[in-house]
Amino acid sequence: MTVAGLLAAHTTAAQKRASFRAGLASGRLQRLPGAVNPLVAKLIQEIGFDGVYVSGAVISAELALPDIGLTTLTEVVERGRQIARATDLPVLIDADTGFGEPMNAARTVALLEDAGLAGCHLEDQVNPKRCGHLDGKAVVDTAEMVRRIRAAVAVRRDPDFVICARTDARAIEGLDAAIERARAYVDAGADLIFTEALAEEAEFAKFRAAVDVPLLANMTEFGKTPLLSARTLTDLGYNAVIYPVTTLRLAMGAIEDGLREIATAGTQSALLDRMQHRSRLYELLGYRHYNAFDSGIFDFTVSE
Image (cartoon, rainbow, N blue to C red; front, side):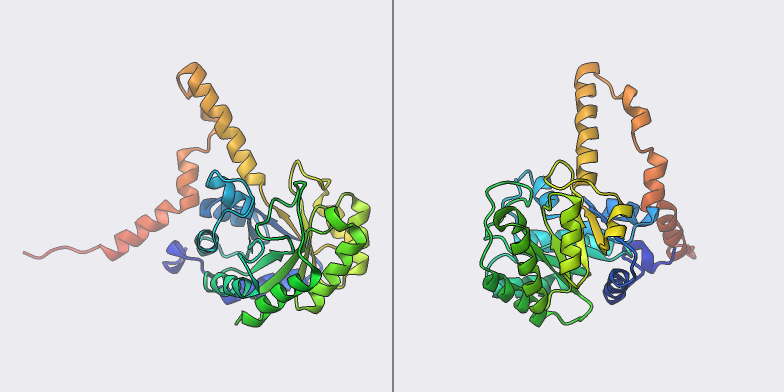
């Protein structure tokens, strides 16, 4: 590992964005697990995924808040910056509704671009939004979402920064209306369409047949959408898939079980074989590379 790769990614933001664009056009499904923090992003890269996703629901949950539009632009940008810094993979981030009016959506894109993200998605829900797999959602008029997208596209400086439009209309207005919205969003300049809360495999196929830009599938657990395999999504012609909350759910399940074990048994001894070992954590963090860097910088003697 080079010195430059210790405290920041080897690749530049522009290189990551170009990589994301190329991946979406490659005909190979781009798999983006959600990262709850920068360390998880490093693990996603090491295992060999194509990109990293930053979920708004996860950012909310880490703050012990529900996903109902309570997080701020500043909080989202900073978490995106932290994660993008830690990986050479492109990072796609959830920008909710753009945090306000079209001008706010434009500012959101500008700040996310500055933070090193490869792209973001904006959704057509009414602000404040709610989780896409909850009932009681509402969507803005198509024309209002078109203004959000046009503002986002107009402000970006790197043309490779991906503007993804998410439509939540399937659960409110039906599949055909969601497809019509997606077409309007493409006409407004969206590079990628996020098809939220589709109910069955046939709906994914119908969306693919109707929309002629890259499509992103959301494989979140315990929601309205069946969990389709990467092979199935590839066969359906999808270009990207996110697993937005999976790592948080895995971690929180293990944490809760572990805390209950300690509370009951009075010790964590029975949990050791379920923990990541100290040596593995140090390997993932690159301790030896930092040590080698320190030794090289401070390898000197003081003359008397």
